[in-house]
Image (cartoon, rainbow, N blue to C red; front, side, top):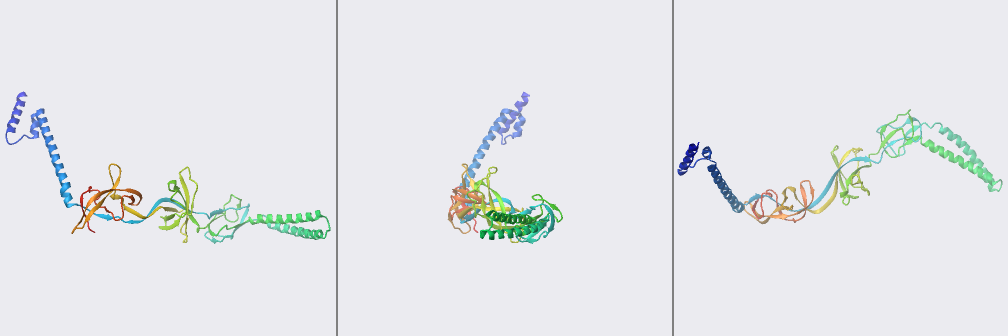
Length: 391
């Protein structure tokens, strides 16, 4: 084995003295770890030299070739514009005039004068409950009241003539007034047997048919709805309490109907709900066509911020440095050319505000007329020569 090793080393020396150096496979075949390790070191040194040479070439190209020709980019001139920011919430439609009518007295429902879908006016008679003989009792009481009135009037004339005792006059007066009050009380009870419309609207549902026995506060008879006075009530996070007030503009979208209407906040709550840290707002909704129904889902866009001279730029052109500062690249020293305009790329640190879709408001760092690099913004460097695509 020792003789074989000496033979391989001799072969290596003889080969190294020739024109062709042994390959890595030939060195590995010798099994001499010392020679193999030396070859590894030699290759690593060559690798490092090659990397340094490549880096030097890249630096030269960055400073000379690319800057000479200029990176090809497109720019956009900053303009001020009206900017409305919206918060988006979801709510459902409701109406204050959507009630179920119940009887105020017990009895048999003798008549229902309306049907489902019928429009009714405020005060219109809708249904009647059997009065249980109250009408006849009132007529009898009216006869007694007439007698009491006649007696009182006679006693009053006598008393005015200083005839008779005062107690007789007072008794006649009290009896007459008691009869009148009793009749009024009975008439009020009788009025409760007639169910009338509390407001103008549409009969949405006839719940109990005539002939059924009804009880006050328990039996539902009719549902009446008025779709003219609709509104949306929604909870708004407390962070917007200073920017969402009465009169704030709101866009109300009804996805099912494919319809959008403009409105304003009608009322804001003065109370913060401790459970979810929000406050309630109410938004009226016009329903001229009658297509909007109670409990219909609505998407709200509430205008919580407006800037008449805002500077907006695309979100995609903003970068961030190692310190967390946001910046954009702008085209400086613009010069006109035959095929391309040329400029120098400069970094501009900015402060941002609110966003809207793919645009963002710039609160500091840019001014009207600045030219920001749009396409190619992330591939250019500070002070790099750039070529600008002409529109």
